[in-house]
Image (spheres, rainbow, N blue to C red):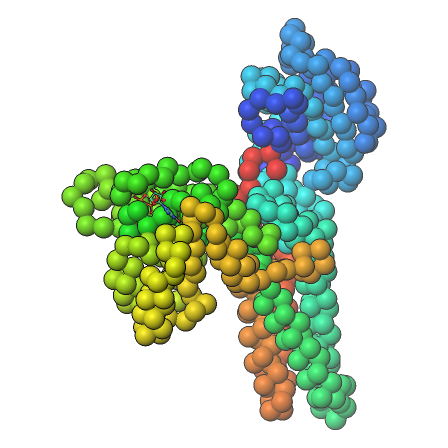
Length: 464
Ligand SMILES: Nc1nc2c(ncn2[C@@H]2O[C@H](COP(=O)(O)OP(=O)(O)OP(=O)(O)O)[C@@H](O)[C@H]2O)c(=O)[nH]1
Ligand SMILES: [Mg+2]
């Protein structure tokens, strides 16, 4: 592993969220953590016990000023999150206090930690592999319970063990193949070709299965975005409010009420769904409305799904034409205000038109945003689209970096399998397998380039 001079520094940072709170925790990690903390926490014994909490008054470095009443938890070298000697100072949670404590720590010789530096050190000291280190960030950023569960499983090493199994299998196939290269001149077949084929195929299936979890993993991690678009007054804001069960957006009978995009989040089958209400699209000379409409268009481009809201009572047939000619695969037609058509006559005319135009039924929903009716069908459609994942027991790939490397392994192995079947020269097969081994090592952080590592840890917040 590559150690940098700065990795020798004893680092400090606020590990709890900035701002005011009951308590705040400042973490100090490095070879001199005990010694430097003791300079401002003189109540600490010269050799603090690991996993013990000490209570006392934290003072300025020159001891003249009492700063706070604190608890200091001590963790010995090799027995902490970072793997280094660590102290965690629990102080009162005020911004002025935490800033002065950090200043005193810097005065006595600590360096302010960079983003993710504690987790980086845990990785460098072998406490976590790279997959686990990445999961720390996912866990902090989880937006839903299933997503947090998946991240926790990753932190506990379940996904890493899957990757380790792939590594072991790859090394087995490679070792046997290389042995057959060595013994080939003596006419000894170390392992029959069928067995190599079988093991390679099993590996391809294993990797393929993990790759197939990515779509689900990304949904769980990032959620989905649904843009609510349509003509002014169609009922977009009413629909947003109906989904969120709160009066999030202003609703009025005046066309052109919503001027800016408004977002609201709702969880469906454990997946965070962000609904984006937009300004009604129409020709206008109004400067503000024009900008709003521009934003509606970009919300449409960005969204995973588009809901076209049409007012059943107002020119719905023309709107259907626009919907059909737009023809996006990720768009759905939501016919609103069905409560105003109790006899259903308008609905049957529109249904006929939709059939003529060949719009599939599963693309159309009939609702009344005002009465909050018909929404369950939309929710179950979304729920089916996002699928369901057993976040308690399945390993799910959530990182694009993992996906890319798994795809690389999959493609090298498929090439290797083809070569084995064709009885090609073992050297060519070995090349593909070596590439796969390199990729799995990169995945687990056994081999890495500094840029990749920097990029991963830069995404972390300070103090983690
Ligand atoms: N009867 C009935 N009225 C509705 C329904 N949905 C919305 N409305 C009414 O239609 C009008 C416009 O609703 P909004 O939700 O503000 O429409 P919008 O699409 O957001 O309009 P803009 O923001 O102007 O683009 C309001 O008077 C709502 O009360 C519905 O399902 N039934
Ligand atoms: Mg609106």
